Image 1 (cartoon, each protein chain N blue to C red):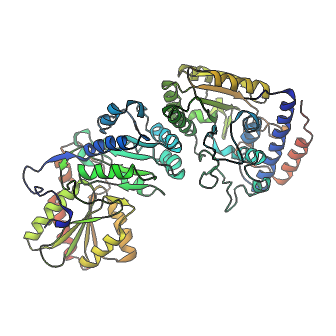
Image 2 (tube, rainbow over the protein chains, first blue to last red):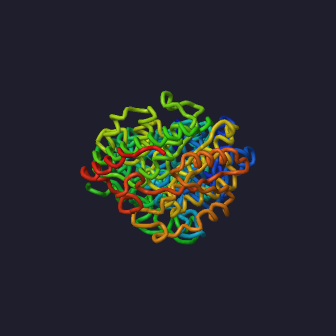
Image 3 (tube, one colour):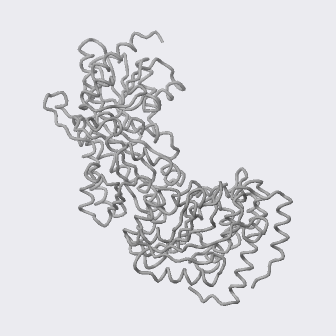
Length: 332
Length: 282
């Protein structure tokens, strides 16, 4: 059942569950952050509405910098502004930022350790028809490997807004990963959120869980659907939502692993280097147990609907259920 | 800015020569590093730190200081030596360049030496940071109170990020931004016009809505005049293309790209110091 302590959306399993993109939540959060702090500025590389920076740009035109299609300049200019005490949010598609400008982020943001927020939207295959060139599947790896950088991947629009407001108040380089598609609202305004904390969203009705499902981003929804059906089939699981990939909540991961002795990870990203890899690093060191990884297996995406692509690349409900059964049957 | 008297110019020439001597000593001791650009920029750094720049070595993080961003971080021996001579830290510390535990990293890292405005080394991203700083000052209405200076190399014009920054500064009419380009015509593998021709470099900047000036980079009086003209430009950003001699001050090193990326041996260092010791101001 849904963890009652988290006050999650009670209509989550309804056919007509409300769907909003998490970039929408970011846009609202950025506007609010801008109202709270006049030092918050936004820079965008010709994708203002796509990244939902238009609300901020309309309200605070003087604090909005349009840099054109120039992602390297996007973050280096932001680095200069941060050095002067501004809190710059840089918006583009994740493929271009942090994709194209990785070294600039390394040198001028992380090496300088300045307060720049990189917002990479349209991550994952769920971008859909635009095709593989526009589907970032490597960005978590690119950002989590970087010293000083914090990495966030929200499960829904409400969590995206909370993360945006939270990182606007830290004095640290941060990466916020967003998606294009409208996805189910999972949390509520009342759901507690703390950066760096992972939360159990699904618990067995009674007894101990047999498998821990660790997810990041909007695929949490598929994991919850899978968990519900597995429960009905007699397989008890816990679902852990990791919206803070770095810093990672090691304690929550190890604690879940100790209970279940079996873990699967779920993310809309390359398996190599992503959230699952980060979980594997933690467990290999602290509590080595069998892990199955759900994610893209060393390939690029392609055109299609989000639903078709999520299924084709093995990240749908059925694939998650299969992975749970597989890990359950593994000897070690 | 104060009047630059002939007397003061002589003092600046002597100071720049002392800085060149420090650069040679540092590089010999470090056994690696970049010689030509560092020696070539000694006059410009001296003019800034001993005349043009509003700063306070005793209060390095003074809120109202001008900001000087070094973009081509590999010439940092001249930055470190000038800062030491200006009183930011002891001359003794210069000997730690490139050594384990030193604040004087092989390329500038602000985490180690926070008096610097930025870390640098990877080319082509200093100007954009300066643009960001100038934009921030515009937002805070501090653009009349101080200047953002960026010192960069000619080789950095090969980098796309440089042109992105040039465009953004032109668009936003950043009259609080003044750039000095070290036009020494060399980069690590050879002469700029062979590796990747930059000419007509002044036309290029002008086409991006910058005010462009050229100057002989070893003439303190003319350099200072150009900086003052740049400060008076209310219409937008200014670039001063400063023609310099890479390796300036040591005949053996001058105008030879092979000295871009290497340090003098002990023997070569002694030869260089002998020549620099014979320098007389004009």
